[in-house]
Length: 156
Image (cartoon, rainbow, N blue to C red; front, side):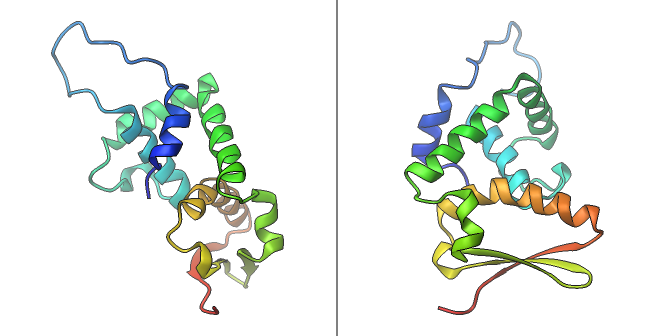
C-alpha cells in the first residue's frame, strides 16, 4: 500500500525541488512520490532492496535516495510527519498499539510472530504503522536469531 493523497500532501513540501538536467542523457527522472513509496515499502516489509516489486523505480535509485535522505535528516522529518498524521487523523498512537491489542508480538522458540487485529486489515493506518514496527521487530528478531512471521488475527 502506497502513501495516501493526504499523506503525500503533508510530505511533498519537505522534499527538495527537483533540478532539471543539463543534458538529456541517462534514465528519465523518477517521481519523488514513487521513490518514497518504494522506500516505505522496504521499511514496511523488511525485504531487501533487490526484492523491490516491479512498478517501483530502480532499487538502486531508491536505495541511493534513501541513503541521501537519511544522511541529510530528511527521512527522520518524513517519518515524524507520518507518525503525527497517524496519531492525529488516523487515531492510532504507536505506543498504544500493543496495549490496545490491535497488534501483538509473541515469541516461540525459533520465531517472532506479529498478529494483527482484523479491524486494521488493509487500512492505511496499518500500512503506516508497519513502517515503524517492522524495523524494530526485525532488529529484535535478528539479534535473537528468530524468524519474523506476520499473521492476521482470526477472531472477530
